[in-house]
Length: 189
Image (cartoon, rainbow, N blue to C red; front, side):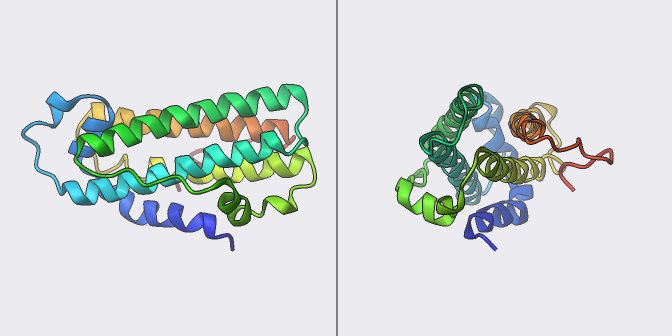
């Protein structure tokens, strides 16, 4: 089992308790956060787990782009998805700072390469399979924070992050020639 899944499991276990304050700040709505009670340290920890996942995704796409295994149109999509993850990273880091926390540092590319077993990538399909697996994990992680939210605007922020990840997973699965999920409600379970 890859160690890269451990942060996702931690996020899934703790992500459902992300407070409304944390998501309000992530949504860029500090006025909404005022007056809400929260365990800010817990929110910072949860947001840092999410930030770690975004760092991993950015570096996974970097490894794929630098592998020489991706054909031009696929490379363009990988770079676009990496840009989405950079935007997620920036929003998460800014939110962590607004909450008074310190954003988790990005590891070196070599560490991600080892954790993701980049040396086993031998084809475009291998790169896409890795990316699809990471995107599915991120989809499920972000979906896990939605149910406990009572504020619709905050739930929308988490849903928008999950939607990006779901779109990435779907495009990658299609590029791999994989069928759509057979069952309804297949994400977030």
